[in-house]
Length: 160
Image (cartoon, rainbow, N blue to C red):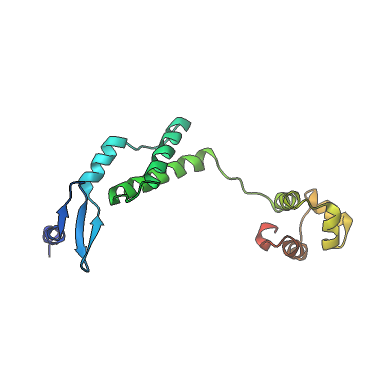
């Protein structure tokens, strides 16, 4: 069967609504299907593009939020929303990278978040001197990491 025949059979079960949304009968229910013409109109109206400035990012976020909160989004609006989210993520990953922390920086963060002192860590590790070395950037052994992970109730991969 040729592409043209498949396409004719596909559109035979569809009808155009006043909103320009195609509906297709599937298992006795009318379901919305993607309409390239309607999508083209949305693209022409909003003209999404690679985001290069903070102002463009804010504009894309505003449109994405509008679409996100729109009840009964059409498949074309859903596709535009996905495109906007991809463009926003790409911009933000480039301009606001999330830096990977070190085991020691994670430990210091956990200590700050739980208002934990080096002395309290000494009780977990068994030595104030070693606890101080670790807090100040020293190497954390696997045994120490296991004890700290248990103490802070986190996965060991955050500390080792």
